[in-house]
Figure 1 (spheres, rainbow, N blue to C red):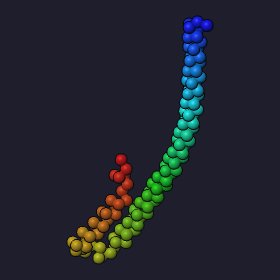
Figure 2: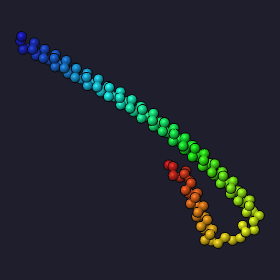
Figure 3: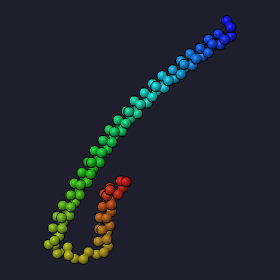
Figure 4: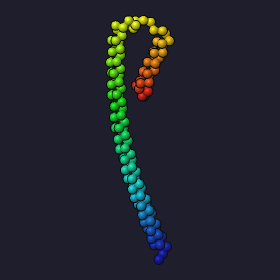
Length: 119
């Protein structure tokens, strides 16, 4: 055999080996990507379920907040009605006491005001 035939056969063998090598790498990469896609899909589903649960908790908390606010308004109206005819309600309250009550009510309102903390 002459050199050109040997060189041609060697070139065909090298081409075949490279084709098999790249084909196998492509196959492995395709399988890895398929597994990654499945894993990411599962994570997305888990996150969506978590979002649904969190949204339900938020909705329940908002409903509870509205109920508590309504109860507070009702109680305040009851107190106001009881104090309307009370002689002592028209008397002066000393500044330290009224300031303390004001600050206490202000702190309670701030601690339950969630609209400012969510941005």
